[in-house]
Length: 212
Ligand code: 5GP
Image 1 (cartoon, protein in one colour):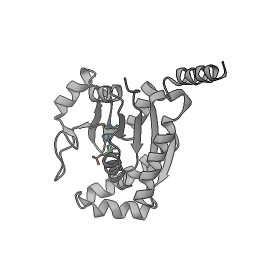
Image 2: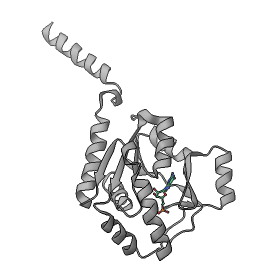
Image 3: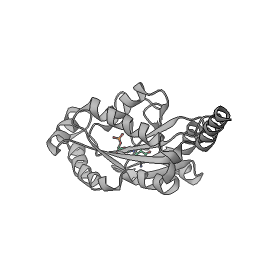
Image 4: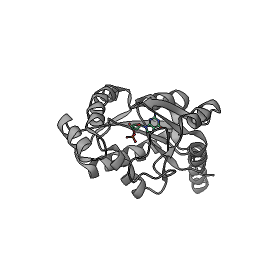
């Protein structure tokens, strides 16, 4: 059986470029799967149910909470967001690494239940001006939403120190390479490599047989 995968949590204020980083990471890494969240937020133009999110009614979302079908959940920007538990478990058991594009509240909850399997990265924008520019440039949200998100961005940034790694997203390719380097290094950690003891025992036996 393949080694159980890792949970890679990426958080950032809205507009720091996290969604683009996630999309590119998924395209380049076939052993990485995205966790598709459930949300009560209405779809934005172009968003597809079951691909970008599972768009649920508040009642259905509550049902998922009640049946413990969510690994974590939180209220973000006046809507509910949560991670369906089963797909995550299935993918990790099959040896895939799981990518979570979730906020600090979700990161905290996953840390409590799966610290050893999780690594977390916080993505910072290069500047507040750049953040604002990206939020406006997206062109999908009203001015009121943008203003609200700017204030929430400052709140989200306040949680940067709770993360294992921090990336300042000055250059997309560089940021992606940084996430890949972090993931690769974390997978090489001694305590994450199953079967290492047996492997070394095998090496020893080989040495012994050569000497004997
Ligand atoms: P958006 O509405 O722009 O897609 O996402 C808003 C925020 O909700 C983002 O910061 C995103 O990371 C966060 N988010 C998305 N899915 C989840 C989830 O399942 N759990 C939590 N805790 N946050 C989420």
